Amino acid sequence: MLEVAGLTVRFGGLTALHDVELTVERGQVCGLIGPNGAGKTTLFNCVSRLVEPAQGSIRFDGVELLDRRPHEIAGLGIARTFQHLALVPSLSVRENVMLGAHHRGRSGFLAAALHHPMVRREERAMTTDAEDALERVGLSHLADHPAAGLPYGQLKRVELARALCETPRLLCLDEPASGLSHGEVAELAALLKRLAAELELTLLLVEHHMALVMQVSDQVVVLDFGRVIAAGPPREVQQDARVIEAYLGAAA
Ligand SMILES: Nc1ncnc2c1ncn2[C@@H]1O[C@H](COP(=O)(O)OP(=O)(O)OP(=O)(O)O)[C@@H](O)[C@H]1O
Image (cartoon, rainbow, N blue to C red):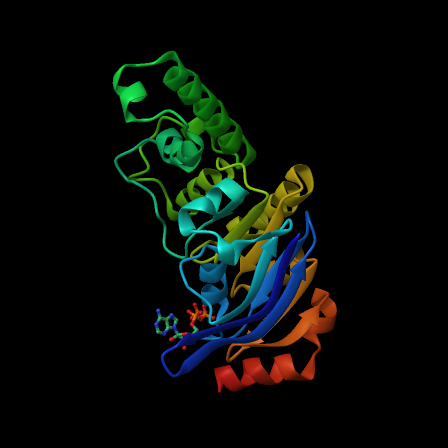
């Protein structure tokens, strides 16, 4: 379970998040929406420990994340994807996905240099996890293909598989539908629902594609100028007067 309480972030004179509260139960999908600049990515960056809040608490399965350092976050079962793809074009799809598992490696540089059996065991386990992640996102057939040259929609799936290879319990997805075709968005919606259910994965989803958010989220949280202005089931949030105003205001 993810519990955010009283979260406040300041960048100089700008309050990017103001006393933000949200709770996401295990295996649930929480859609985080709001106009540009509302603070969505900043909230993700707080969970990843890339941004230091001025106040508040972020607990995941009872662990206070704000007491942890950024490199400890993956080890706590938390993974994320980025708005812009963070893949290595020259590596194969499988190798890119395996990058997600490297934080679990326990053998050090010396063991690797000496080809210690422990290193080989870890490599085998990472390969198996990568194959498993690729199967889940439907890309097994492209495992040996270099990331370079693949269509954007498939690269987004490789990125998702890389995050899954970290075997997370909480996955933060930053605009997974951006740049996808209509058909690919529909496939993504089905995939995200399946992943949450099959892996009991808690999903925090920042997305501008409203149809996707409304379709996959158990709960939608709306941020505007760093404050939560509405939270609840998609249907309720969609009809909330403050949400409609925030979006119409942003569009005007
Ligand atoms: N590192 C930073 N330094 C200063 N200001 C920042 C920083 N990061 C974000 N901000 C500001 O904080 C506010 C929230 O930004 P954030 O990127 O979290 O919004 P967002 O909801 O993710 O927007 P978008 O939908 O456009 O990605 C914005 O006013 C932004 O300019």
